[in-house]
Length: 352
Image 1 (cartoon, one colour):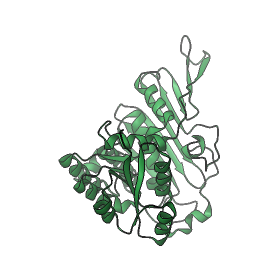
Image 2 (cartoon, rainbow, N blue to C red):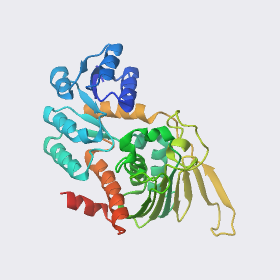
Image 3 (tube, rainbow, N blue to C red):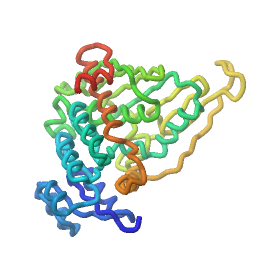
Image 4 (spheres, rainbow, N blue to C red):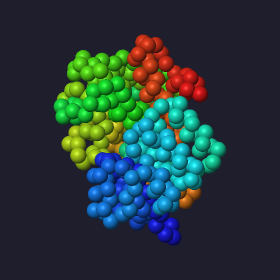
């Protein structure tokens, strides 16, 4: 790039401020302005010496950034992204792409009509661990994929639930946390064709679930299970095993297992198990450590966003792709509610 790109940020909450810090440290871009109506955001912008806007529309109109990072509440993703499309400003939209599949379809139609690129912030796709797992499946190191196990088990602190919406429907681990894992599984294993699910709120008694069990059928024919709970002391979750966020104490445990006819891979500790000679349960297994390079996926995502803005790279996670992940999460909720098998494709057909 010949000059730094000017990036605006809409939403100065926790993840918005993380993006702002990354922009400040990047050689590729500079922070052009912050849009957030709260007094705290105004003070924060002033402390960093950058323009503050109460309304993101004013940021787009007056500041005219090269790109916008949308780090607002989920229900604002669609109108903000549509305004970016209308003004020709590429956007990085924090996950989920929108609050519903129906709204995601509206955004996808606008992107298709105009060609303005949208990148969705499923940042774990940029993690070298996830990329290495995807490569192991894609290049046949595991043979034909047969079974997948996903675990997201930890205990959220009691004060987490002092925020009222986290005790209500939509505020639980399915929409807030599971969406990351579903996107990881889609990225590594391919599309999910069918889901079944059970949920429970027995541990806390809130209106929202605290525990869920999922059964997945991938389009490839592989089967998968995912167990989720935010009410148990346990080390088996991406947050605690990957080391991606230093706020969480890292545990040397897996949270995913990918099994195929030629081998199995545990992630993120990246142990590849296979038979060195004749396969069979009496034969000794060999263990190989797959060691991808280490770097911050959020840093890589920002570099990639700059390349998307300049048209040098297509979005790794497009709005349409991210809609597929959201459709699986909506299918999980529908399956738990109806006790039926639900197809994510059916969810998208109903929303159309």
